[in-house]
Image 1: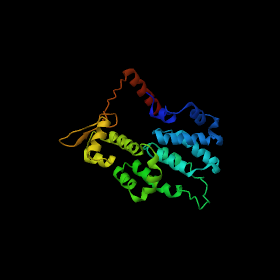
Image 2: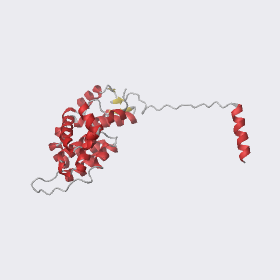
Image 3: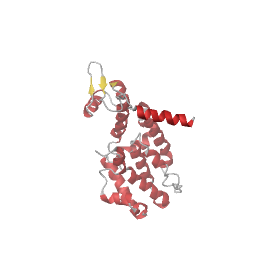
Image 4: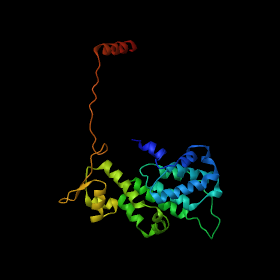
Length: 244
């Protein structure tokens, strides 16, 4: 089974063409930016994700400011948002320092106004403040982001819930359905259906959700027994005596 790191570096859904663009010298060829942008929109429509390919777009924008497309950047950040707790979002942000200043008043750049919102949402996910994330995401403040961007990102909310589930699996063996519902922004039948979908179980009498056993929520102590021979100990003592 491939590791998380290998899957991140080379997703199984990446095509040979994109692999050549990401891994070869063509990574810095501005003529290929259109191919990478099309690949990003394929990710938006298909619930796939390829961080390195998206970082390649941002690097091309950095080297070639005339290629800059604010909508592409925002969509890259939205995809990176749901990679928490991995550092993809910060990696993307680190490549935005040299973005050009928009001088066309008829087409204002939406990124400066949305970037603080995206950053706050990212921080809430990183801090596992899930109810606060959903409250902000549903608020009027984020209406522009929802109506113009995340609505086009297939499965965005479920991708956020994947982040929640990763955190819950690492911290709980049992959790109340009410609490889990606030984390997932789901209630009653929707919550029950989601719990069933991920093969967890709810006790109908108590409303307690059982989280399957995994290496993170069931830490087992181990006893390390060292076998030191008397001859070895004698050498250690003798060496210590010589150095005194």
